[in-house]
Length: 207
Image (cartoon, rainbow, N blue to C red):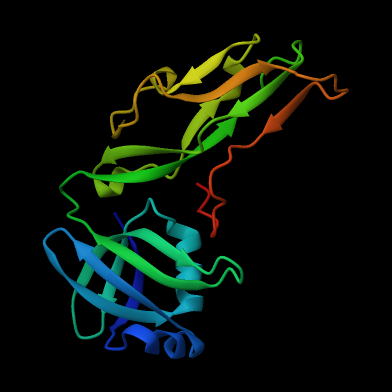
């Protein structure tokens, strides 16, 4: 499978000096996992953001260290400034392409509930944890809202179709979305209440 690549440089700047590094347009990062001894890297923020729009946290990227070899990794964590929204740091998880790993995958809600019922959709979660080979991690997992036909209907993890490429690790009884009675009269047929999870700081790729 062809991967996106990201050229990086080894980083010696640490601690309080990282602010100056960011002001030059570079992002500090760290790589760990898969028996790799932790090492620090840096790269231009613009190039990383373009790459991240394609890979998100679910697609392998080959880090190419100048003078070194390619290292397959997943973006594991992003540190984003809570006010400015600027990227401050990236964690990469090195992976073995022949060994399964775990990843957090966004839920993609598709379809619509019954239009004959005046209900409200309650989305309880917006991501699921899966185990798969690195190249088999899905970009997202679809949840079909058309299953919701009556007040009280719930879609749980166990209701999702099985997939040979990955296994969902979350408890099968975990509610993903439910169709509840409207508490007050509304003219609209069905309102949607989003989950109260922390808002995503950077948009994940769309398959």
